[in-house]
Amino acid sequence: MSSVADRLVAAQPAPAPPPKPWTTARVTGTLLMLFWITAAVGLVIYLYLAWDIDKVEKYGPKFLSGLWTTLSLVGVSIALGAVLSLPVALGRMSTNPILSRLAFAYVYIFRGTPLIAQLFLIYYGLGSFREQLQAVGLWVFFRDAWNCALFAFTLNTAAYQAEILRGAIESVPRGQWEGAAALGLNRIQTFRKIILPQALIVALRPYGNEIILMIKGSAIVALVTVFDLMGETRRAFSRTYDFQAYIWAAVFYFAMVEALRNVWSWLEARLTRHLKR
Amino acid sequence: MDSYLTLLSFGDQGWGDEIAWGVLVTVSLALATLPVGLFIGFMIALGKQSREWTVRTAADIYTTIFRGLPELLTLFIVYYGLQIGIQLVLKFLGVEGTIEINSFLAGVISLALVFSSYASEVFLSAFRAIPKGQYEGGYALGLRHRTVMGKIILPQLVRIALPGLGNLWMILLKDTALVSAIGLTDILRQTGIAARVTKEAFLFFGIAFLLYLVLALLSSIVLNRLEAHGKRGEQMQ
Image (cartoon, rainbow over all chains, first blue to last red; front, side, top):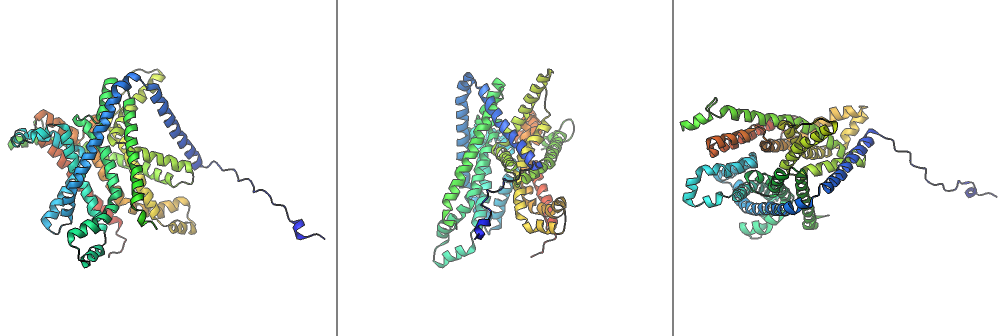
C-alpha cells in the first residue's frame, strides 16, 4: 500500500536565481564605482610617489600650525558668535518694532552678503579710518589680519546662529510657557529651565551645520594673509609648484568635516535618546 | 563728496563702468552655473534612489566629497588641477607649452560641483515628499515611466524643491565672490583693484558689500514671486 508521502517529490534545492541582467543602471553604477575606486587608488599612489621627506619636514609642521590656526579661529568665533547671537535672537523676537527691525537688518545684512566681502571690508576697509581708530586705541586690534578675521567671522556667525536660535525657541510650543507660568515660574526661570533646553535640542543639528560651514568658510582668511591651513597650502604651492599641497589640504579639511559630522550625529543620538519611541 | 562721485562715475576717471562689468560677470557666472548645477544635482538625486547599490554609493560619495571640501579649495583644485592635468595630457601627446584655463570656466565647474551636491539633497527630500500613489496612479492610467516623471512627478517636485533651491541660489550668489581669488573680474576683484589704486578701500569694498546686498534683495523678490506662482493652486487659508 503506497502512501501519499511516497509519491511526493523530495525536497529540492531552491532554483538558482536568474542571471542579473546588465541593465543601463547596473552598467552605469559599475562604471561609476570603478571611477571612484580608480580615483581613490590613484590618489593614494600619487601621494605615495610624491612623498618627499624634505618637503614633509619643511612644510609638515607648517601645515599643522595652519590647522591649529583654522581650528582656533573657528572655535573662538563660534563661541563669541554664540554669545552675540543671544541678544540678536531676542531682538528678533521682541515686540518692540525698533529692536526687532534692527535685529532683522543685522541678520539680513550679514546673511545676504558673502563672508569674503565682509572680511575685505573690515580688513582693508577699516584701514581708511586709521587715524580715527588710532585715536580710540582700536587700531592695535584691527591692524592684525587674524583679529580682523575673528571679528568678521564672529559678526557673520552671530547672524546665522541668531536665526538658528530664534527658529529653535519659536519651535517650542506656547503651552510650555503657559504651563511654567501656571506653576508660578517667572519668565527668566521659564526661559532658562524649560524653553532653552528644549530649543537647544532642536538647534543641535543646525549648529553642527553652522560649525561645518565656518570650518569651510574660514579658508578665505588665506586671502588676507592669515596663514591658516589654506594659507599654508598656498604658500607651500607657490614655493614648490607641487600640486600635492592642495591634495593634502583637501585631505585635512575633509577629515575635519567628516569627523565633526560623525561626532555630531553621535552627540545628537545621545542627547535625544529620551525622545526615541 | 564730489571726489567720491568722480571716483564712481562711468568713464576714464571713475570706476563705475569697471564695477558694472564686475556685476555683469558675477551675475552671469551664477546664471551659467545654475543650469549645470541643477542638472547634475537632479541626476545625483535620481542616482541616490536607484535600485542598484553601486549607483547609490557612487552618488553618496560625490555628495560627501563636495560638501566636505571648502569651496575655495575646490576652486583652486579645479583651476590648478585642470591646468596641470591638461598639460600632462598634452606632454603625453608630444605637445609642449603652457595652457591657461579660463577662470570663468573653472569657476562654473567648481561652483557647479558644490551647488549640485547640495541640490541633490534638496531634490532627494522633495522626491521623498511625493506620495507613492502619485506614481501608481500614473501607471494605473497606462502612462509610461517617462510621462509619469515629466507630467506628474516633476511639476510637484519643482514646487516642493523651490524654497530649498532658492536658498542654494543665494549661497551660489555669495560663493561667486570666491572666484576673484583666481583672477576673474567679478564685483570683488574690480572693487579690490579700485581700492588699491585709489586708496579708498572702505568706499569701494563698501560698494561691493552693498552690491551683493542688492543682488540678494533682488533674488529674494524674484524667488518669492516664483514661490507664490508655484503655490497658486493651493487653497488659501
